[in-house]
Amino acid sequence: MKSRSTSGGLVYSTDSGRMCPQCRLPVASCRCSATVAAAPSDGVVRVSRETKGRAGKGVTLVRGLALEPPALAALGKQLKTACGSGGTVKEGVIEVQGDHCVRVMEMLKSQGFVVKRAGG
Image 1 (cartoon, rainbow, N blue to C red):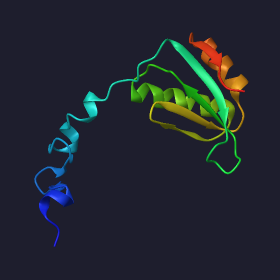
Image 2 (cartoon, helix red, strand yellow; image 1 turned 180 degrees about the vertical axis):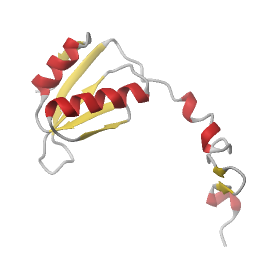
Image 3 (cartoon, rainbow, N blue to C red; image 1 turned 90 degrees about the vertical axis):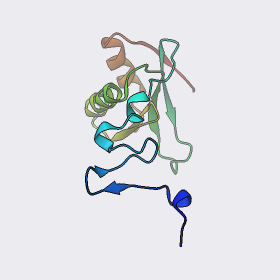
Image 4 (cartoon, rainbow, N blue to C red; image 1 turned 30 degrees about the horizontal axis):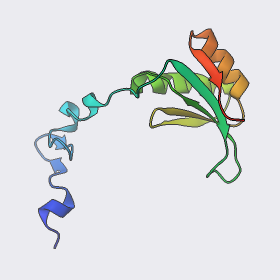
């Protein structure tokens, strides 16, 4: 039988539903997610293409955006729609499937960001 310390403690309560494992509050009033800050940035958005770890498939990466997670997700959705492809937002980096560096750079410049092409 697992001890309470190894299982992580309370994860569900019949009174308030799912519980946050870090602060032990209901997920709706969790303090942990509110403390997540945007990554520090030098003000330059870097756009690059990468294939490492993706079985040779290229993705366009957008790094250096000093935005909150909801705003970053909304911008990721706009970029994916403009490129007509899929993608995701992970750890402050927007990934757009395919080689769309030029299109992504144009769109970011039109929204007022300072954009640089990074990598090869």
